[in-house]
Length: 238
Ligand code: OAD
Image (cartoon, rainbow, N blue to C red; front, side):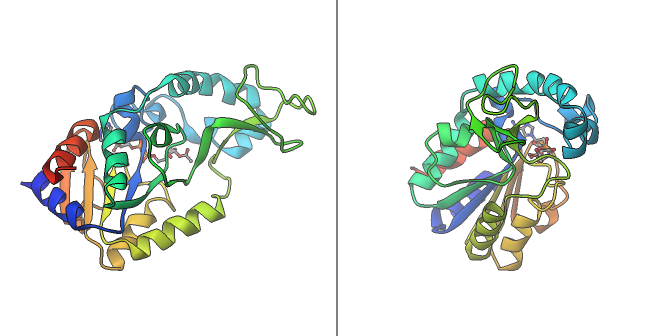
């Protein structure tokens, strides 16, 4: 029933916005942060993913990111990514706002992707600001500095203002808010769906487990995004 209702809402949408999180890439083999097998069940995020610990000890940071980075760089989009790109192509979604840094939405053909937490596909030298192609060990070729860091937002770093503003504006104008594969506990990203709901958009939540905002949703589907999204797409008939 809920899959049918989600399809009905999305088929009518002309300014739908998706907010995605790590769960959407789980079926591409990239571990999530929270939930079963999550990265933060093994590591303390403040220790390994904050700007202060990075500046103090970039080597520890890079050791942990080898764990995730190699997998993420080799990963391919899954049917969940492809279905979201198809919903955009069909005119039901105007953008995909993502907390993911893996670039898989772009690889699946999605056109408007707003990366709230930056990108893990590029590195940046914090000493001379040069952006380089990914390489290990990460040293800046221009200045030789060792503070080369992926262009992801670490805890303690400001969010990219342009992306946050664009996501906020899209949410205000959304006629459907589709939330996929995110635990909705990291702010301000988690605020985006609430902006849409407050502006009157119905919210659809697709996640493996309950989220704190399920009570604000018109439809909640607890399942795998790589299975649920293609089902919805098939019902819409696109
Ligand atoms: P989380 O790891 O917090 O949440 C992922 C959610 O996806 C969990 O609730 C899982 O139950 C769910 N999930 C797992 N597999 C799924 C599947 N196949 N289909 C659908 N849902 C599935 O990831 P995010 O909410 O994205 O921050 O995390 C937010 C931020 O916390 C990340 O962007 C990162 C992290 O610290 C930064 O990098 C700044």
